[in-house]
Image (cartoon, rainbow over all chains, first blue to last red; front, side):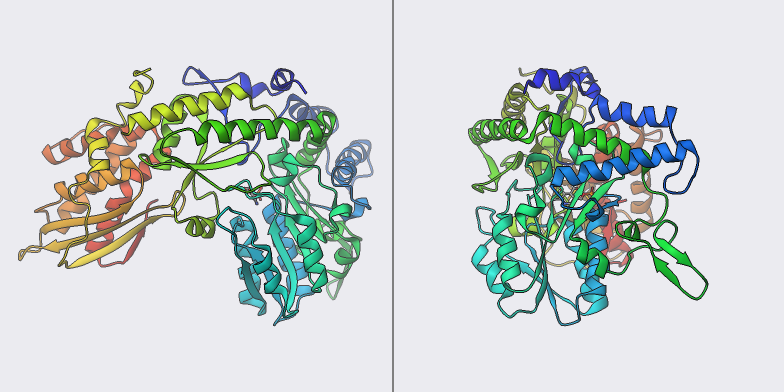
Length: 405
Length: 153
Ligand SMILES: Cc1ncc(COP(=O)(O)O)c(C=O)c1O
């Protein structure tokens, strides 16, 4: 994999910010888009746009085919056994809300419990709190170790009383970079009669995901972090679960027939896809998946490992810089703080040098509390990130520290 | 490389760096008449303000504890200084002018009090940082109004 070639595929990377070349180290928040994605969306609008699943005319059929091809691409990406197991949502957040609502209220019983972890994004916390408050399901939180890994013994202990119906944890932390031992988590969940779901928002960008090998029951991710458009995400779930679950939103497309007395539901996955979907975004997402698979996860993972090792070494050598999270298995997301400067000041100074990082609580307030901080700065890498960009980050951070000393 | 951040000196003037590091009023008051917290959930900034009133109910003293960036701490500190001796109405009016200044970068009717706050005018170029500068003021106004919590807009 040649990073220079990849960079040429991302038009935005030739931008300058305040006269400086853009160094985009915020791919964990949202990734940039390759030309292929942009072209696919523009092309669809210019040549074959109509609503999907409803028209009998040529345009609609074409658009439906293009949109549905994304379902096949997503199924291939995750090695789903059945394309009907791919449900399109707006993003991961909606995917997890769908499960919390339909599986949570429809299948889980009051008195059962859901287990999450101490390093979840708010989108894998709040839907379960809403379920708890509306439906009497208990919410349990598995702790993390000081290294930022899931405490597996404590996790297993939470399932011992057999009340847990569902485990929903992140596959990769957006703050610590920790990759969780997904297969082991599934084994433990299943051994205690619980289903297992992963928030794969970060993980799928960095690792090949094989839902059949993982053996999990639900897997959620979001298109915009995988170099695709905003407004489209995926929930993969086992077909028998989707069939047993009541719908989430009601409306057009998700029904089989409607009378004022009663409606019946469409087949899965359409039962969960009410209303006109994100058609163009779906078409763009297929281009993103094809692009990623064209490069191949092996190359992506190797590039990211090299970047992460280099960044940990360079940042770790900066006096007064603390890195949060020391997981053995980790991806290209690094949270840090300088002793002399607040994360926001750091982000503003970096921004002035054209370096985009994120500062704040990263939608993970409980984790921030666990780490004993209010905010951190975070650099996160994409396939287009270079070693030179990481060097620029480290060199600039040294100067930021001087500035505030 | 000393000039790397030169264009940031507008935002991080010496006063701000100094006040951010060593605030003069950065402690809770032993005895106080009002207090309130300010919280900016977007970025995790937190501040608590304590106020003691003089017999004529003007502000005798203000103290604060802040967990936040240099901008928010410096803003709290400069605020504590400028509101001393002011009535509630005066303080609210000052905040209104201050807010205009940090949003626009200019202060058309700049009196001495506003001049003291002027080092913060540089934040207008950084829209995402404006709320860092206004958070302590929101907390102060909440304290004066007798509400316990404020969040910056
Ligand atoms: C781990 C994790 N989960 C969930 C999300 C939510 O993604 P989205 O906002 O696209 O739903 C994010 C990204 O913000 C994330 O990093």
